[in-house]
Image (cartoon, rainbow, N blue to C red; front, side, top):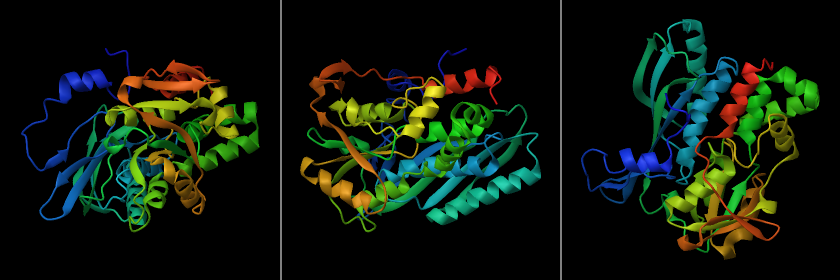
Length: 351
């Protein structure tokens, strides 16, 4: 039995997957790569197709609506890194055998509602009930978008000298989900008001608006070089991934990393470092140095906070966190500490 949960690490990806991806096709411009959110397939003419896939969430203790939200939005966040919203969706549902038809109806109604709001047409998939399926994963989905090939952004396009920006705060999704899953503990330790505030941040876990604001509704802003959404490994993990994907190093300034007081308090309660745990809702954006103020102000007009936290450098300089002018090498955390904290709280009887 494996002692590591979550996504496979860069070394396993390189060993088992990267050189074994079926038939070679010339039109596949961006295939499977570590730290790259989407694949790009060139179509005839000036258009290309972007695709991204992710698991579907089903956490009864969190709620059916909330599970559906995560299922749609986490995939949409990946597509958002191209600068475009997703257009089409394929969903594979492997539901627990004991999942009632009434609950399925509720869950799927929310999937439909959230897809409709973004503009996603559900084009097909597979749905079934599976004996022994009792995890928080209910299958998987793929989102697709078609756009001018020269406009699609990919995380590997970032260059040395680009400034690294982070939207919102670290640990948004970690904070919200832990507060919702362990309400009595959070209320008792931090107070009812903070519990309510933490739960309210749940619907900030979409970074689609962040990306569209960065590039403009009509993709009119050309000062963004790359984007990467924050998931497992948190903001630090996402910066590591975008640097690695683009073949660069990075200098990250610890005192610049945005950590809201709410996120800090909830993470502290669960002995988590908000910089390194699941942070869906934040977007890593890279841009040219001269455009930093312009990009930050552009997002501020949409009421989205954005902070410059570092810069990309030549690969040989490495990936370093700078704290009080002292550099420390960033080690990629293959196991997001959120999972250990969640199960420790669960097994400890936290409510």
